[in-house]
Length: 97
Image (cartoon, rainbow, N blue to C red; front, side, top):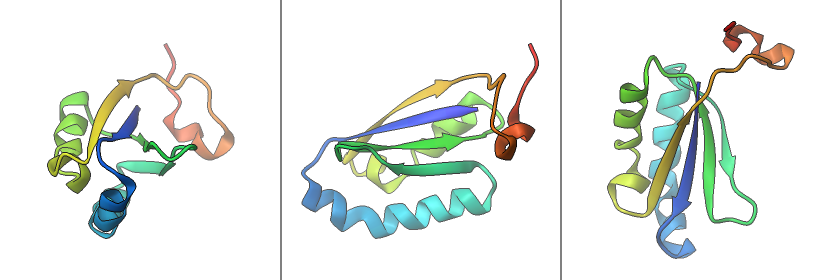
């Protein structure tokens, strides 16, 4: 599982103008079963995505297709983790070490 930490690199008016294309990209990843949750940071300096990709290289390549990243409006930090505990709704993603 991966935590994708987005940080905005542009003023919010530029981010807001790009959000429809970014939202369509998010919808594609949800439909593909890769994204589990996403949303804005508070304060609004970026966003966070919880993803379940097949491997790190695939997730990193996917990040590069985000219009916000592609257009230099946001940068990403990708953190892989092993969910050894999870709420019932996410129990299918638990791993045993």
